[in-house]
Length: 539
Ligand SMILES: Nc1ncnc2c1ncn2[C@@H]1O[C@H](COP(=O)(O)OP(=O)(O)OP(=O)(O)O)[C@@H](O)[C@H]1O
Image (tube, rainbow, N blue to C red; front, top):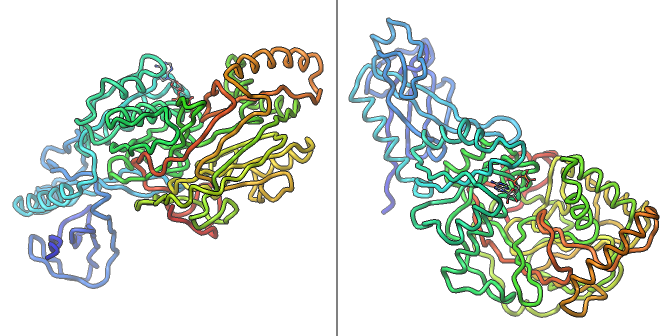
């Protein structure tokens, strides 16, 4: 038989009025009693019609704590202003901290304090709420936190100490905190030393690069612990059991935008505390049966690879380097020859050109039947860009993202092929990323929702590809420096894998459905940069 939710109802004093307060195991509701009604204080409950009601789901209560009214301060040492007469009449109080929603997907922690005249009644309330919170088994209790002190504006430590740690403490979450000392510190610690059994999740304080490190560490460790060889492109990877929380402290925070709807540390900390789960696909990238990297958001060859490669050489310019390199790459207008073969996802509903936006987590399993492992397609030609978007890749610059309808957790990636075209047409295509117009509705652009794909550059026959590429780049970069507007193209571009350059152009990519889980709910209510009219999807 299903356990009945514990019901608790009392009339309690709140601010300057008496409130009827009800806890039914799912909702905590407090309702102001109209002034003309007779008030009975204490534990006797008389339901009253009318009044203004406030409700909070128990799953969004962070904590409940006693408040020492007489002493004038609460557990946190914050000053409570209570008139002398009232503290005498209602000397027992408790405070409930809960999630309150603000504009643009922002969550805040709010407090509500109830007073009563009876100490036993207060204890009954505190105990009952605590019992309800203990029953929420999906909430993390012990977390491993990695802070990148150099991400974004170098505020990682300060953001964590001032905004996140107090919320974790309020929700009785204990933490082990590691401030990274060098790049790949977090990845290597997770891969080898971390005692993962002790934790309910891993928290990453940093940007997308730091998140990628955490994913690499956790995925690699999970495969190693389960005897799975990452070097085999055909191997089915084992999903990670620990969830990952992202506290945004980077420059772009794309993954945070895509999974929470805003890059706000407090909102993200609250998503971690309430213990939501958002599954996400991860792409594995191989070259010649050797594992290269995992990708969570974007793999880009041609335009996006060249922009990254050029911007890496201009780090001294700061964030302005992306605009500079973007403009320069657009002007050079290089195209690259090769063959893209791909396995279309024929067993799913929806296409990359749907009008739906993926905002919510899919919590079921998506099957990948073997019979769909047939029917590879091949496209050969000259490309300005080859992009694989495993999520929309929306950010303030591109509100709809590279592939607005891409899903977070359906086991597919959207393969976008932009064939050689005029500069003017390519500009039209790029500009559509900044508007709501369909960027795929152009004769030189095609898009496929795929489970796997391979790319082979035209001149790539063997392992000396990289040397060829380096030599070719030096030669062509010299020529192109002399003639910046020349239309000749080097033989190879680079793959931009979530902001890292891959050492090979010939790659094989497979999507691993729901390989990781985030502490996130997906984007609630109104999407970040669009109107309410667009429908939602559940994958
Ligand atoms: N202690 C450290 N010293 C130097 N680099 C570090 C350290 N810890 C992590 N890193 C590296 O810093 C890189 C960038 O960090 P992060 O992603 O946090 O910030 P960002 O690049 O400013 O933001 P975004 O990736 O969102 O644009 C990561 O690739 C990570 O490997």
